[in-house]
Image (cartoon, rainbow, N blue to C red):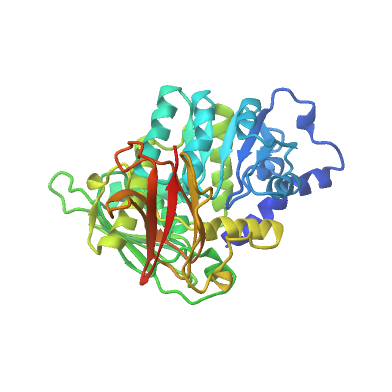
Length: 459
């Protein structure tokens, strides 16, 4: 069965290979009826490039093509243009949105998704967002709000949500249900990248109504350790419990990801029978067909409520890892967020350009001790940036204090992987009020490491 890594490599070359094989300029160059796809950021897939090399039965029926690409890391957009068949590189993401008919957001730093997607949504253009859907709960809700307000079709999904096995599971649920429990597996080890596969696969099959999420096992945010260094990992487990319906016992789902062999599958336990549903060899073809219909016909493949609940389930899983307890999806607030690491961004750039970007490397280039840089500029008014380096994966905080030791602002309060980071302070406190001129201190804590430095705000 085709793996994600083999698909990434093939899809990245599909566009240029298709042009070369044709020995002629692509037909869309003269076809004004084709929709222009603009891609914002390098991600983990090459779906847009596949529009130049579609399944054989879709030849001559493709209604969109790779038009323009943007990325904020030097050299990435040019390399994407050359490998995926885009017509041009555009240096301004807003200009790319203006020139494109449909927008494909794949930037692997999902903290930027709302910022990148907003202009296209406000123009009512179809927007695809790669998984994970967003960083915080509030950002996910704002994206959906914009889509509804501006009648902008929105798609965000795992490719597993569009496999024919989903319909088979739904029929099985009718014939042999209700479903009491299931076990789902993804043989790739990364928390925010891979858990959406099993969570979303089950959600598409069995429907909404998830009540709680619980996490146990290995926590990994470093793609390089799994994909390149082949560091041995244990299983990561997410247990989802659905709300009880019509007095029936709640559905319990065991979703696990790991680095050991095994196909994408769900083993469903119905009241009358047990059956395993394994995704076939055309996982990405079904995704491509769905994406094409979304762009060409504005067909929305999954309800927005499903997208939001799947995202909430992933955030609740992350929250459970920190609390050690099951977390109710209803208890999450707008600021609750997914963990983030630059390792994902660094890994996809490395695969394209051949080397890890500075500060986004894997564990082999991680700093050996906690480092805290002097903020810049200093003195400042009103904004300054703090640089810091974390020696190993840990829970990190950066807190600003005034000259008498009172807490003013929490800048960072989350899990981080080993690596180099920056944080920006805009001179406001936790309530959003601008602070006065004076001496302030910023303290970074990560695990057993701790450092403090001084800065000056002058107005």
